[in-house]
Image (tube, rainbow, N blue to C red):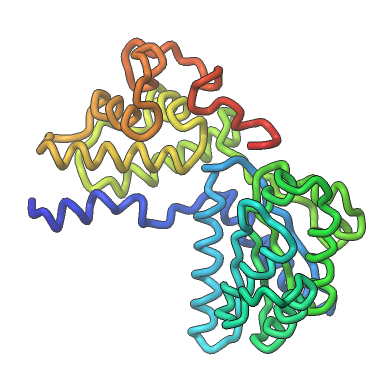
Length: 311
């Protein structure tokens, strides 16, 4: 096997879009919000919140890619993506947004937060923007004592552009809508973009996901979809797709790098150490024969706090 072929296999999973029913449902809801905004003449919004690693970033990339393709096919669907700064102020939000739009005056110090917002509104109108995506919106809740100014900023942008808005963040992001009933009325029901869980419906989705990943491994491997391995992968990832893909990608890498005949339980055990928890003991490594099959959510364990509102 050539080094080029090996490298292509190693990066295959992490670069391939893996869809899930949750992603498909969310993309459909975003399309509905854009449609409702366009035909009602009133800006609508959608809040998508959930734990880190559940696949929100993958969903965003797919959304932007799909709309970019529509534009290529002869339609104008301008989508603007903005990741909020870690310590947001109205002025820094405006600067970050204008920088993303390629505005040469984004960091002009003499321009007030209000002026920057007016400039953003003008540019969005000129571009024919239909959708604005704000990511990492939990920073507003985490960093600002009063979220009213930020919510007023978003309302003003929606009112004066008629653009659909999607807010994305961890579950604490919900507080923005809870604290402002006017903003809340502009938004559809929140989508809880959750991790996979071992319930009847979700476990079926998790099995389907593992089957999909198994089908694109590119190397020999033990089955990923026996009842025992489903449990092991669930505990290893806590139902978070990002961790799942990292572990499997790493296992492929180890297998190819060491010229192994295929991926074994031992290889997955090492991959878990490399990607999730370097100093894990055998009884807490989900791929160890000694694993005690308890969730890794205790203090100092990798998934501690994942289900908390702040996570």
